[in-house]
Length: 248
Ligand code: 13P
Image 1 (tube, helix red, strand yellow):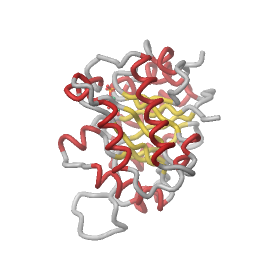
Image 2 (cartoon, helix red, strand yellow):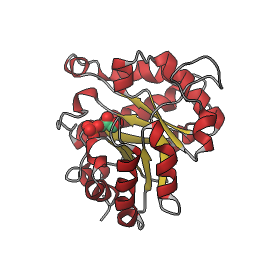
Image 3 (cartoon, protein in one colour):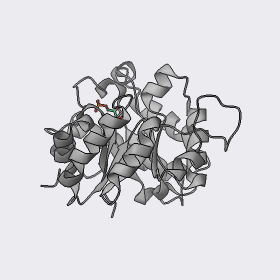
């Protein structure tokens, strides 16, 4: 069975002080969670949040990682640096990084392999734009992202894919449960086909895009959806905790 995973992506929100206050409020609310609970925080918040979540259910994630072990890459952070602070998860290839920071399927692939080699669990984001969906290109785009972004991955049980349709991110326009389930079923089928013998059946796939305290239950009830990657609603402890308790 695939253990559900609910992860917050704080994006560029919360100073270390604000982040500590948020996880302190969150801790007691998620202590009895049955799913995995992760917060992916700004890099500079990591040391303070690590301390604040000590002894709790909450696991720590980052929002990016560089593919080189070290070297002349100004502004970047290596897997080793993240591991030193107890980071377990790292978001890779978020559509905001693809859109604003030149991330490509190729760099997503390099970052994913580096994270896996270092022992981090990548949460790799894929998903189509509104224009692509309206032109019937959703499956074609997902197929390309899967073929190019995941080359060389040997064991898909060691990573998480987040299906995030770009048109649903931060817009309040959630994919319907059916749309999300269909796209995720397609992703699983394609991974099984493209990467035979790679444990694709055990890979977890999240949905992300305006998931919130109101719609999480219905989305999580879909058989293909193994979790959520939550932006805006992860910034409020009560809302995030409600999502974590989707099974109640
Ligand atoms: P929202 O939940 O704010 O739409 O953001 C989703 C997202 O991008 C998570 O990575």
